[in-house]
Structure formats: C-alpha cells, structure tokens
Image 1 (spheres, one colour):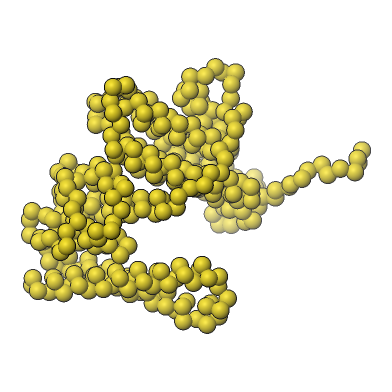
Image 2 (cartoon, one colour; image 1 turned 45 degrees about the horizontal axis):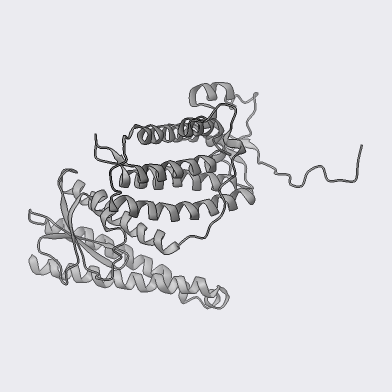
Length: 368
C-alpha cells in the first residue's frame, strides 16, 4: 500500500552489458559468459573488480574478460603485500631509520588525498573511478613505493614503530577497498588484526576526510620520477641494480625531505648539489631541475644527443599546445583564473626545460 513516502532516496541505473563488438549480451548470440565459471577461474572478487573497471558512470558496460583477469591479479597483489608485511621479524630495540620516517610522512598525506577522492567517487556514484583510485593507491603508492622504501634488508628485522604504522596503513586500505573487494578484505582484516570470526570489517567506520598537504605529495612525485630515470639509466647502460651510483642535482633549492628514500630506492651512494655539471654524466630533467648520473665509462655522445633531441621535440610540442590555449581569446576570457595560472606555470616549466636541454646539446656538440 502506498504510504506517501519515497521507497528509495537514490536509484542508480547501470548501462547495458555489451561485448567487445558493442552487441548486447544474450544467450541467443552466445556472447554471454557463464558468471559461475568466471568466478571459478578468477574468484568472486576478481569478477567484481573486472565488471567495475569496465563500467564507467553513465555508459554501457563493455565486458572484457581481460579486466576480470586484472581483477584477479589485483587480489593476488593484495595477498602478496600482506604476506610480505607479516613475514617481517620485529626488533623492539631498533631505532626507526630516516628513510622509513620520510616514507611514512609521504604516504600518510597520499592516503588522505586518495581517501577524499574515493569518498567523492562513491558519493557521486562514480564507482569505476573510485575503484581506480583505490587500485592506484594500493598497487602503485603502497606496494610499489611505500613498501619498497621501508622494507628491511633481506633477512633483517624491522623496527616496531615502522611495522605498527604499516599495519595501520594496511587496515585503512582494506576499509577503502572493502566495498569493491569484500571477500579478500574481510579475510585479511581478520588475519591482520587476529580478531574473532564474529567481528567484521563491514562494521568498521569508513575512513574519513582529513586535510592533507599537497606540496608533500608533489615533492615525492619528483622523487618517484628521479628513481624511475635512474633505473632507466641502469637498464640502458647495462648496470647491475646492485651497483651503487651517485646522483648530482643542479638545484640547491631542491627539497631534502626525502633524500634518504631517494638513496634507498635509487641505490645511490651519494647525492650532491654541485654548481656545474659533472664530467662523463648522463643527464635527465625532472620538472625544471637538471639531474646527472656520473658514469665510470665514457658517455655514448650520439645516443645521448638522440635522447636529448627527442626530449627537446616533445617539450617544444607541449609548449606549442599550451601557447595555443593561452593565445585563444575565448579560453583566456572564460576560463577560471586558477586554470589560466596552471597553464602559465606549464609554459614557464616548458621554457625552462627547453633552455636546459638546448644547453646540454651545445655541451655535447663541443665534445664531438
């Protein structure tokens, strides 16, 4: 009987599930996979993740079994991270290393930013976007960067402070993931906290929004980029990951907040801030900052020139794109001041990079 009350406050309509050829899933076409078989092969959580990844808000769902496999791999990643953390032996007498303090400082801010994005996605029913933020937070930020920064040397114990903070982070991550991956998060929540079967992660409070320091996250992004560039240099020059390198940064104002993390992740013996470029060093740019890795062997000038010319071409193209926006009268008159300010900053950064790369190319020409 109608009682004059709304039966539902919010109703969420999903799109139609279609195959890769954009045909509607149906038994008559034979293009509809058996969900039971999918769950047997990839797990219930894997199927949930796969379906959410291919279901952007407001659009039809283009089913892709590859995304279901990706969901299973994500579940495996979570399990493996749990096994790694629980395998560490704790030594109460150890002092907390500086690299662990720095990594915790960064990840705490990253976690707060991502939590706000995830909550916003859920509240606005952009579930696929919320899941992708979760995915990046756990796989990239937590597993690939944070755990690598704080994990002890193989066979060595970890200090109690870092371990307890890591368990705290893991618990928050499980709560953020639970609406999307309920089974594995429930299991790991019990394993991680050694709680009775009568308790459930479902009854835990969802992480709340807390103000975060964006500058901390941005500065650590530079650290990630430097580490990635150093690893590329190792690969191109066939240098063992075990061999320690040195790094020179031509920017005395470069933030020192994460130097110990940079040393560990880049396997660096020394980080210096010279006035001039060191000899026999391969160069790369991070933002507007010039960085150099001195190598014992002579630099392949031709290869270095080719790399710099590619970077120069890219940055000139990027600058051209930015200038088109800034020279567009409609854009300048209608865009918010913050957007125009960001474009102006992009222009300044691109000009700075171009100037630095052209300078490096001139120096290479002298060596030829």
